[in-house]
Length: 356
Image (cartoon, rainbow, N blue to C red; front, side, top):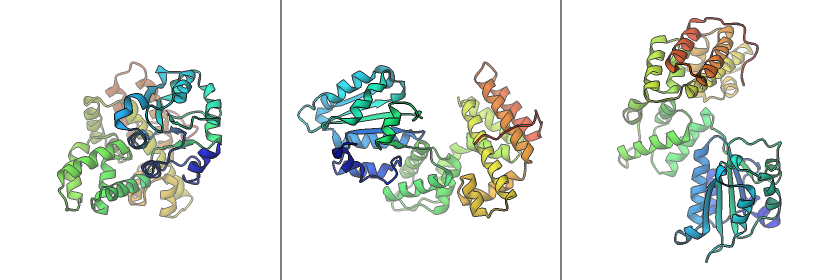
């Protein structure tokens, strides 16, 4: 890594791949910029916030037309990216080039030489989903310490994020209200941010946001979600599960997403059962399952509703449903049949493995 880049990067988190959005934003406010960033991962909301802050603090609004370029990967190739990055800023210290969906760009290999000697007057930002770091140029990005992953948050991280968000916004909120907000919305930061905005618009300062506020503002629209569907299936509540499926499909929800949430939920139940078999403490089980201790009681109850064989069989049923969903099958029929089979314990065959 070049010295001028290293000075900045050494101020970042010790882990080369740690994505600390607030640290990036704080650095940008101080006009500290590296010449090259590679952001990737499932939590696009975090990346978007950081990129928005970069644009705000690195580009003069009056000169955006000349000093800011934003492209998607399918609109550009490696040579064009280098050409844009090599251009000089117009009446400014720097220009910013942002490439979204970089994994869809052609001719990416030419970026290897650019990363070794980036332009001093350009901040180049490449954004991708889940790249294969065994391949070039991604392997070089990682080697040089400019690759940062914005991973989807785990349960306990999401509640901590809500706490931090509310403190940043200087809005008091009850701890129980934080937990309820998460239970309604899940760990999607984009959705959490949207619901927090609704709460801020509804609950006037200086009042503390309470459980009743969350129930009133968020709960009405959150009774029918994929997360609630997973809870009802785990509780073996067939009628409510089918009602939620009907509402979700009616509102245009993809059953592929429902299947993914159900699969993740049953993975947690399988891990909880495994922890119980090993006689782990509740704190250890929560850590193994990747869930906040606050929610462990419900997971323990749900895990007792199913035998190990039934949970393993649920993975097989959901895998078959996923295949059917990606063909021309009827979405509602696929979901109702799958849920009914999971809850009733209809064994297709012995599942050989559990997805992790």
